[in-house]
Length: 553
Image (cartoon, rainbow, N blue to C red; front, side):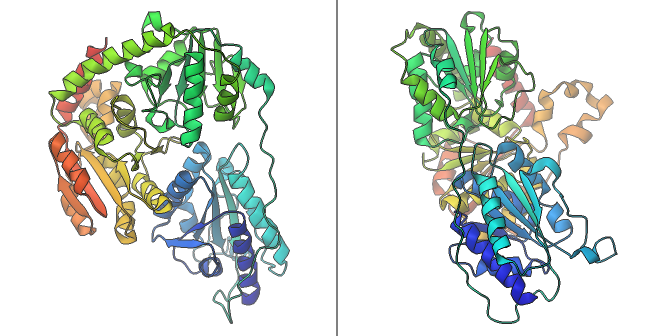
């Protein structure tokens, strides 16, 4: 039985590697022994060990998001598998390809009081693209080859990538009884057709040329060539672009507006055509603008057919890749009148000038922190921005003189969990420095990720604006309830944790900065895993945010 287990798992990993998978994240356990050992012995796979399955899940998520290729996960049975759920949910909603392999007890052990045995059948419910349970009968190696090919292609090919779940019940003995077989691929990766660009979609966009249009982009995973194609379309159409930091479009010319969310509500800037690409935007002002926009033509470019628009305010949804669609449409357009775009550029520039003047005379709070990071980090350093305030600050306070850079975000489920672990995965996959901007509560939520980064030897800068609690809640109406709603206890949740002591205990570097020039210097000197803590006066930060909003009204 053991030899059969290693032939089955060996065939699986050989085929998965042939399908382009190169990274496997393993957490230690007994029942997963055949999967872990066979993966470690498979040529072409790099196995990364993470002690904590929750950290491992988000590490794999960051790897897959950064590389664009499926990443495999391996854990033992029981609650180990349950700890993958948050990462699986995020991968499902943000379209990140994962192959989740959970070891399990055989059927006769289930519901019989056996240790580390829970119901793992379809454990992740509808949060996966596909589920399969491997058979306990392991003497059909071709099945495991097909299992690998289908898992890899379902996770990573086509217009709707995401996680798949494979449950592996193993009977004892689990350890190899002889030499571990080294197998090679015999099936190969099949060609999975991707939906071709439909000419009707191209025509639907190109016919709108000459009208006053606006492009809004949320999180979007495109490379430099893809981002350039989108900007070329905007230039051909004469349409300005309101883009989140995670769109990969910021810093790519004057049509990609900085400070745009401060002017989207101006009446004289109402567009006739609204096109949204990527995920939903993170900024509330932009969301409210889209919901109330009276444009007669509102197009949602939705290649995954996910209908990611809670207001359902679109006149048409085009199931095309935005890069291919806009690239093809720009080829059919002539030169556009730039007066419409210039009016947006001038309004956004004016808003940004007023904000920058205010920031230049201010202490180092979150807005100036975000702007300073984007200016001072080398452009080749990717930024992983946490949900909550960091992703909004990087979007809102991206300065006009900042160069383009890759910005990664977990905006599928918008949770603050696993941010450091995700950034660690990105650093390992890219084999280069990554800077993660994460609030103090989100950091404390992922201490295991900081420990994993310390053990990994990765090059990771962790920038933490520390306002001693959940600052974002002070921007919500519940803050007006004060003591009646027990605001400090239930929402702000001050913790009083010394991040310096915490970092030192985990074996990572730590420094504390309070001025913008100190932050720039700390970023330049950081090496290995470094926590840069910026103490934030919570009341002063809230006051500044309100003042900045008043500047643009």
